[in-house]
Each structure stands twice: as structure tokens, then as C-alpha cells.
Length: 394
Image (cartoon, rainbow, N blue to C red):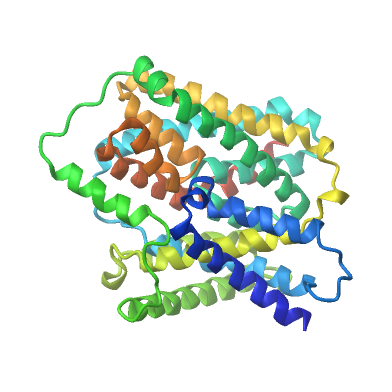
């Protein structure tokens, strides 16, 4: 009975939140992921374990948290437009933002590691932080599994990340437009209306919950995406078992192969420029968020003992912002582009339309979404690579 209740809870609550986000705009503003974390933590910490009505089966919860991200990665990446991007300006802006995050992330490891008990454990923190601030939640969950991070440490990071990125978003909303446009040059106007039409198209694609992947008109593509995803997951799992020495899956190989095969699948004609698989992948991420939060009992945690993680994440956000502005000055990148790049990397692509609205510059949406999707694609490689680099350094 507990297993059935757990399955209904893990699959039904994210779907309900996605549906409610269509009616209540505040859910989109705070992010459905935040809402699901709150629900999961409430279920873990406020409901008595022996209530006799609602009991979570821990094994089922763990199973769903383990399979959600490997399914989400191919689904989300296949929904990306990997072949039609204009890489000129986007590449320059993205590289400046990416290098800023990587430099500060690695520097922060040497600054803050003495306040952490275990260098390898802090290397795991650095790896997941790299995934967060170059990609987003899908990379965060994938890297957590690839580097075998404990769930308790993962909850510290997700909790502190909400604080740090929340404060950064407040700064962007209140002062971002003024600060970025004052420190950096103005954006050059488009020569024609083509960019405006493209940005409107990308905005529509980036809004969550606009389509139902299982509507009759979308059902065929949705099931095709699911079929391809299952095939990718099966191949990746088989290879990860094959290269492993102990017969258990090699998580690093599994995650990197999932990412690579999914990027390749995004070039298949049926997958081009369709939102269905991305929405399905986002749903898997929501299931993961709910499962991981439900598994964590805050009452058993020493929050004060993890404060170095909070300081480290704050250092990354502030330090990368300062460094990105300096790079932008040298490369003559306009303030609007830097702001939308920063929001796409720090707060994730769903916040790009918000940044564009704050700037009153809808043409910037396509740039922000492009940067965010590039981050999704590279985040797993970078996070896992930095982990192994820092472990080797010691």
C-alpha cells in the first residue's frame, strides 16, 4: 500500500503543480521546483511517520530519484535546437560567462576547502556547483549521481542555492537594469525585424506548461521521444556496466554517455525544434526534486555545520558576476547581453523571459535561451571534469 501511495505522490504532485502554474502565475515566478522542494520537505518533516494514512516508501522514493534524472537528460536535450543557432555573439557572451564561473569555482575550492572536513567531499560540492551555475537543475542532479554525493550534502547545496540565487534575483529585479547598462555599453539595435520574431518564438518555447505532450496532436512525437530516451538510457546503462570493474554501473560513463547520445539524437529530423520532449524531461526533473526533498529530514541535519557551502556558493555568484563584467568590458559586450547571460547561468533558462521583461528587450530572449541550452549541454562534462581535476590535485 505504501508503494502505491508513494508512486501516486511522486508522479501526481509534480503534474498537479505544473497544471496549477498555468492558473497561478506566482508558481512560475518562484519556480515549480521551489514549490516541490517545499512540499517534499513538508512531507518529510511535518507529517508523523506513523500516521497510518500517508506513508512514503523509502525504497520506492529512492528508485524514482535515481531514474528521474537519467530519463530527464535525453528528453530535455532532444528538445534543444542544436543546429540552427547563430553562434557569433552568443558564443562570445557564453564563453565570457562560462570562464567566469569556472575560474571562480576552482579558486573558491582552494579558498574554502579548509573549512570543510574532507577535500574529496568538497570537490563533490565544487562539481555540483559547476553544474548549477553553468547549466541548471538537470546537471545538478546528474553530477550528484556521477560523483556519488550523499543526499544530505545535496540538500545543503539545493537549500543554500535557493537562498543565494534568490537574493541574486532580487538584485536583478531591483537594480539589474540600471547597474548593467551603466557599467557596460548599450546593445546595438537589430538591422531588421527578424530577431524580434525569433525571440518571440523562443519565448513561447521557453514558457513551461504551454502544451500537453499527451494531447492527441502531440502524442505521436511524445511517444517517439520517450522511445528514443529509453533506448538511449538502455545503451548508456549497458555500456556503463560493461566498462565497470565491479559489475555495478559506472555513473560517470553513464551520465556522459546519456548527454552525448541525447545531443546526437537532437539532430534527428523528428526531434528538431519541438518542445514535447523538453516538457517531458522537465516533468522528470520535477519528480526528482520532489523525491530528493522527501528523502531529507531537516531535523536530523546540522545546518550550521555546512555553512562553508553557503559561503562558497555566495562567492561563486558574486565573484563570477564581477569577473564576467570585467571580461565584457574587454570584449565590448553590451550590458543587456551580460545580464541575460548571467541570469541564464545563475538562475537557469526559465528566468530568461523575466530578465528580458525587466530590460524591456524581448529581442534578447533568443540569446539567453541559447546560452542556457549550451550550459545544459556542457554542464555535465564540466562538473564531472572539475571533480576529477580537484581530486587529482588533492
